[in-house]
Each structure stands twice: as structure tokens, then as C-alpha cells.
Length: 168
Image (cartoon, rainbow, N blue to C red; front, side, top):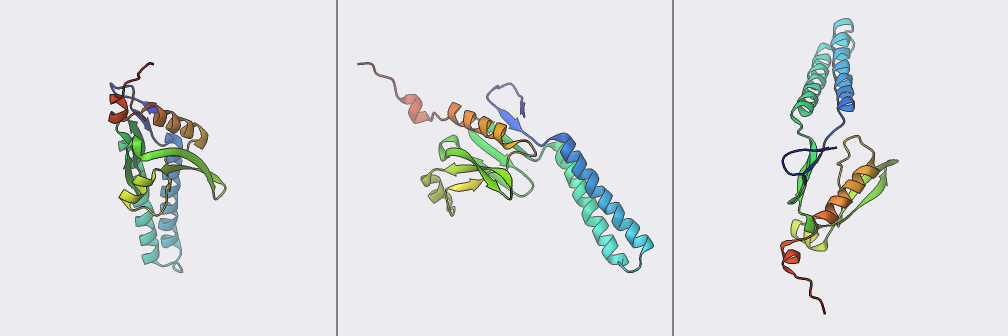
């Protein structure tokens, strides 16, 4: 996790560097396998070998670019939660989220955002529980704690700020 910028209330959670580098190495190693299989084996076929090499080398290149330019990340600021990954880009204001929970999915812990009913209706979502894949290879429990802390910290809306505490 990383807190940066001039404002201390902005938190950015991004992928673990060594895991992403290892995945890039694996993709490029598989691309190299397709190069060799096309060179030494006529049974696989040159076209399949070339296609496999191109696809895996391109995926490895995209993964390197993702690591360099930090495309995949979760940014938490006073405006809300902004999740950006390869396959999705979502933003939720603090007042749209009721809570965060952990759910076991394929024997792994997954962070789930529990949305308010008004959010589900306005966005046309099928249910109030939305998978929130924001751990980026990190343990889910510390990420959940960070999400809950930030949700509590920024839960005040403009309406709540306008209310005054009246003493009897």
C-alpha cells in the first residue's frame, strides 16, 4: 500500500511488484516455448506457434506496461473508491457503500462491497453484493481493514457536515 501526494487522505493500493514481475517472466517464458515448439516441431504447426508467441508476448508486454504506468490500482480519496484493473473500471462514492466484507471464493478470500439499495437501483445492478478485487496479490484481511477504516473516516456527507450537535 502506498500513501502519496500532498494530501494525506489519499491512499493508493497497487500490485506487488515482484509478483507482477514473476507473472511477466512466466508469460514471456511461455512465449519462448511457442517459438521453440514452432522451430523444432512440425506437428504443432508454424501458425499455431506464431499465434501463441504473439499472444503471450503481447500479454507480457501489457503486464510490464501495467507495472510501469500503474494502470491497475485502487485509489481511495475523499470522493470515494476508484478501482481500475485490466478488465474493469469502477468508482463508488463513500455514501454508496454500506460496508465491506470477506467472502470465500474458490478457496481464496475475496473482498466484497455491500452497496446500499439506492445504489443498486440507480446503477441497475443485480444484487447489493459486488466483488471488489482490490487486493492485487496482498492478503485480504489488511486490505479489508484499510477499506473499512477509510469508509468510516469519509462517511460524512455534506448533509451530515451541515448538522450541528445540539446540547440539551
